[in-house]
Length: 138
Image (tube, rainbow, N blue to C red; front, side, top):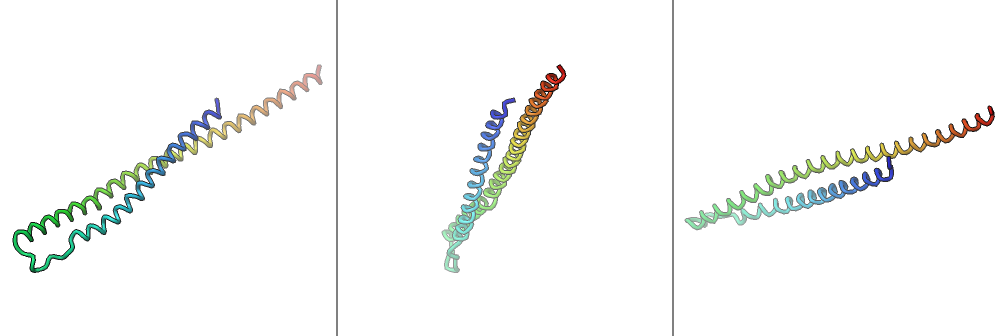
């Protein structure tokens, strides 16, 4: 087994997964900021308060349009953003599990290489001892 090739392949995959994790975490932070800003702007949609002087068809149309805009924005900011954040969180969990698996695999390859090197050294030592023993006997 070519341990160097295996380690390089694992390192490449690990770097790729870490880049994905980094991009998703940045996206999550950006969405959280946008959600906070948008939540503040939603409250502004309902201002100014319509007083008793706002009556008639135009006032009712204005109120209905403003209420519709408020409801639509509220849905986007509170429901759609949350669903998107949940999707990102699931992707992050999957990628973190993949990263843990790659780290385990990387450690296993390094351990296997160390054992093989120790085994090769032991085989060389045994061959040397057997050669000494043959010389001593013959």
